Amino acid sequence: MTYSLRSLLVAIAVAVLLGTSSATAATASTTSLDGTILTAIAGSESAEVPTASAKASDGTLKRGCRDYPVRYKVKHAGEDWLLDLIVRDRSGADVASVSVHGVTSPRKGRTTFSVCRSAVEAGKFTVRGVLTNRDGYDQTEYAVGKHRFWLKRR
Image (cartoon, rainbow, N blue to C red; front, side, top):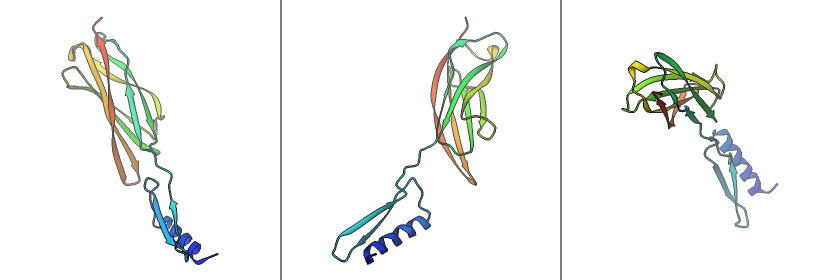
């Protein structure tokens, strides 16, 4: 093994031992005896950013307090994640919320939120939220895009 190849392998090993994250690539360069620059990339695979989505179907705002379904999907999150969803009415007021925890819930599924017809007006509603991805003591929050749906009187 030549001197330049050996130093290149040492540079790669140091980059790996320093704990470079998979989201950023560590580049190690060395110059061989004849002046050729050798470059190696450690950890070149890109990490997927956790995402989530939530959708509720159009429906009828029924008399009394009722549960209405909302579908959710979480992608690329760790084992311990929390999805907090908030439902807003047409005036922008928060009328319902629901939390889904990754330890006890599947990554894709259905849950419900409760709304009382006497407390809201029929019309356009939105569901949006926050995905919290936990890794030990570190937690990172990601916004969940809003989805509009209608709850009509009849």
